[in-house]
Image (tube, rainbow, N blue to C red; front, top):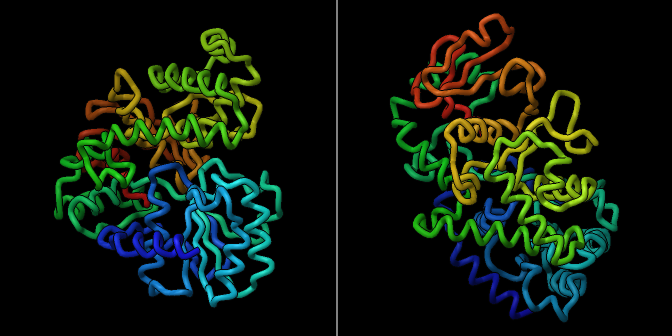
Length: 396
């Protein structure tokens, strides 16, 4: 345990609190049992350490541990928590729970048998409490952490405190909002950089090596996280990589399951399973028609890469039209229901229709469609029902 305390104190001393994401305020930290899941690289570890530094002194009452530490190859998580609790521990922060066998059972027992201990844990976006071999769903409050929004990226780059806006605010007041933001900076001066490397906060460590690190992150998800979660053998890992490579060069990808099965050598049922895993790992994003979703047996209308950073990382030909749609889908889908539309590119919250295009895109496609909007790239300020694409990066 002393070894883990030393590692924690080192991390505590090194963590910076200059760039703290607003997501920290979305969590009700008064809950005794908190889970935070999200894709690799979105900043879960940093967020927990920042919370600890802001609210706790580095002493015997708080402990952070990562379950990928070799300590847990020969030591039990529950026994560690028990020792920590008996010595006056108040907060146990547990990182990378998906890397530890039977994590759910042991954390449940920690929660049940140590009533004055607060537990915060993080895990892969693949985690499903309903799949865990313990009844955690009625105990834990679970949060899903996204990558940086365009607004957060600008704030990190400029040290400003630009506010987020609701979708309703943007639809109703986008002109005045755009003008207010433009008075402070030129949003388009930051937009291309965000599309390239701004979604994952680890870009702050070294922009030059960002894509190398992102490639390593994607490989870790494909080679470790997904196989460990779904118990997939080496041959399956190779097929999943092949599947992702094919899709990444074709997005937005309208899936033909039979053709994709023939091209990859993966059976149709296995193919659906692999696609679902890639989506839950937040490497892909499925666009369904209205009233259909991820648990549906129906195929998605389109498949996108999850965010534009992944597009620039593994796509051989980054198409500007695909980039626009990927950005819009990614930024809207965190807090809103985004579906395919027969008349336009996207239907949001089953109410608002959006057609996404460049600055010369005509409004004629939506002119007689109720609650419809034209979303244009490369414009700073819109007019009437035409809204700048970048502004949808201010939703969170």
